[in-house]
Length: 207
Image (tube, rainbow, N blue to C red; front, top):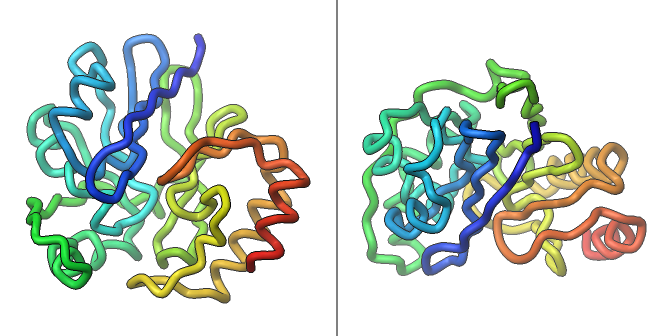
């Protein structure tokens, strides 16, 4: 049973939304905006959707959550430490000049209560990686790591966005460098890449 991931980039902030599937089952990761684009590009109607997982609660990653959740009657999973970010998404949108308002999603389960999630016989392992936000997580399945905004190619990922903490970010980055060398990194923005020695050294220079 092969794991397949598909990606579509959506919204003003060009967020990568992923579908992680195995046969007829799938999880949605970070549906940031453009509900209809996500549904058509990722063929959502052709899967038994298990739920929506968000790597963190920033507004640009959650804009389509509520609509997709309601349309398919599926749960939304987020780390509890990002609840405030997710519930105040429209406030943060206005702070950066984005006037588009999105429905606030209801969180059904907290990722801090779940060490892993099932996808057929596979497991999606949840790693709490605070720094970009307090409740940021990375999702490990086979040799793929879905990292949200923790690792962006050519970018240190350290920011002054709501919920960010540089000290925690450095600790989490070093955890990723130590444990996931050779993995395919699937980021929240930009292209996927392999976490090799060269990319690790470049990230370390930036932090």
